[in-house]
Length: 249
Length: 249
Image 1 (cartoon, helix red, strand yellow):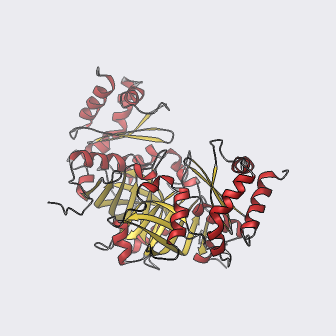
Image 2 (cartoon, chains in turn green, brown; image 1 turned 45 degrees about the vertical axis):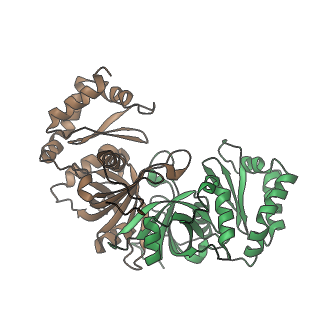
Image 3 (cartoon, chains in turn yellow, green; image 1 turned 90 degrees about the vertical axis):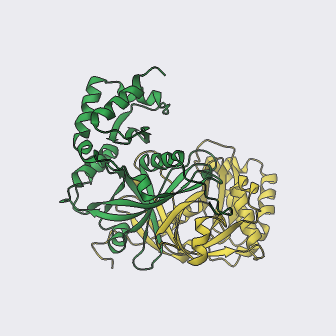
């Protein structure tokens, strides 16, 4: 039973899905850390991608306020979900409280995060390998979705993590899988965009796949699609995607 | 002398002006507080206006996470400056660390803030007077401007406050002053918009004046203009505005 005075609603699967889509379709976010000198919260803008398990990853300069703050205290929050035209509060947004882990270049998942980040932020190739840039992986602890007036939900951090034994294998095969898919179906990204009623910007490009869905990008637009159930391997992901793209509606 | 390894530049008047324009032209912001239960920073979206002295003011529900957090610890930060098309990090943004003061309805500046807020956020009239909504005035303590790669500046909170003995008098006369100005020059807002190279959206409306400049709004766009020097009274503000609108370039 919820407190009747609480504006929180019972968290259901629709709310969980909306939260995942908001987090995974964000190109940038407001990242808030704890200022090590003053103890004030410090919010600033970061580019964001997701790791293969859906955890957000940010790329920051070692000289930035973020890095100094997160090196001292790993507690961070990420605000995702950009407003469109009209009342900014009418658009859903998600606050994810996370613990930040620096991703060393020697780390097993550095290459994976770098590849996924670059697929989404191609211009970051100009500086991603500078010695003073590093990734933080942000492990969700809890999250709050504000879906508009009177529509607030809370989540456990695990609701935003893709709990799949296939994550590692999918990460290894992802680039080749997308390349093969596009070779077999050169129009697959456009067909997906049409089926998902994406804005007519184009051309669209698939910029990430995982057990839980796929990401597509077209200049400033990032589109996230979540499958109904987790895919067990890359073949399963491809068959899901071609079904969406080419099945008779 | 700055630390040569620091990415900070010497703060100059251009940087101060850019910071003021970013803060005062924000319709919404990411507001980060300290979560009283977990100590995590908590960033979420708020509508923002400015008080007559340039201090930001936010309107929030008493049931919101902000209110619970700020009632316990007044330390907050506000991220303003929205990105446009292209690389989100190429657009300047400002982080203002503030101390939040609740504005009671009995407070001397409640009406002033309410009037200025409504002029900017007309749709808020639907809920602004609900008993569970309240304003916080956010007193800037320090601020960081990120003007794009390699262009970082720091400010004292007072750099963002309008230090003018005329503030109170201007606040009292502001609504009538704008009404009279528009009566005398029905096209003044459009003339200002043209002179300030505003995007051709229109129609434009003057939604705030103060010693340091004026605000204009057109649907989702908020335009802030800063005078070269502080105006001493409302006549001075009007003469500045008509000069900008109608002088031969």
